[in-house]
Length: 82
Image (cartoon, rainbow, N blue to C red):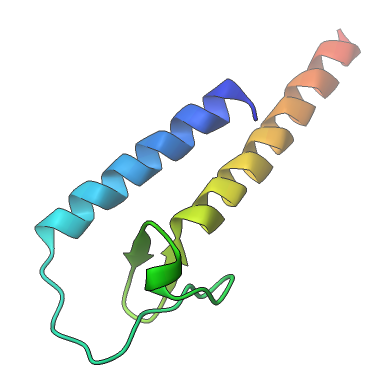
């Protein structure tokens, strides 16, 4: 994984952790599920939630990898043009 993408993923996870600590969610009698992969909150380390959407730490990491690869390809392409 690109070091910059890894750093961005770590920063996103840290922000999610801080967000989790700031917001008290109402009691639920069900588990949240990731809107992307479908895993429940008990199957992952972290779950970032919005109004009707959730994303787990694993999907965030995968997204960061994809973005990092795209950025790497863009940099490589621009360097080849020079």
